[in-house]
Image (cartoon, rainbow, N blue to C red; front, side, top):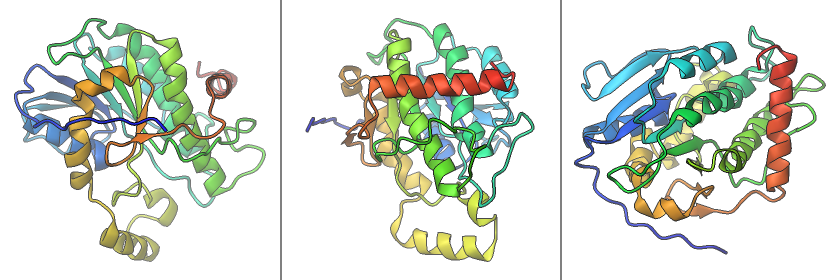
Length: 289
């Protein structure tokens, strides 16, 4: 088994660091953005509602990330010429009954996976290619649940033939891991990584349990006893985003302690390519390519 050792550095003197967080208006993305901004980094967050108006180091771009068209157009307009770190955190959990966006996509798939692919395609070619003063070339982090040995339903990504909550959600999980490995091959001048935060107390389960429902209150209450808060997770993982040791680990995925994760069994480069191709075919079928 491969080993990976890194030494967390204090988040300070980050004035030259520019970070883009898609989904950074809440949950883990917001917490990580706040940690980096506190160290002086210039952070841009993309989402629906801005919650850090009093933080001079955090700027906001409004976008509907459930819409592929809006996600793509937002990505096109972003100035990423000096961006050092791109982090995707926006996501939900599949609902008990299948939900479909106005563009004809299963909602979890659209919000948690497909928008990332179209935004990567728009953003990455415009990133700089030289190393920054921190010693690394641009990095893209994809937060989901890589390394969980889930391969998804590649033959029915949109859950049109049959729907179940877990099958739909695990398809987005597999898609995000595939996106890391396929992007490494497609964009060799940028580095890509996967992050698996594990179970954290956030609002990601609202779509499944119902926001402020009795089920949500009970489940989230129990989880709060033994899971990390977004702030606790961010404290441990934010230093990883700028760790120099990552330069030699392009295409790697990490758990909530920054430890190296093994690829999911069966998630070969070929499978990852086929998965992303299936996603592109779905977007084309819906007129969204």
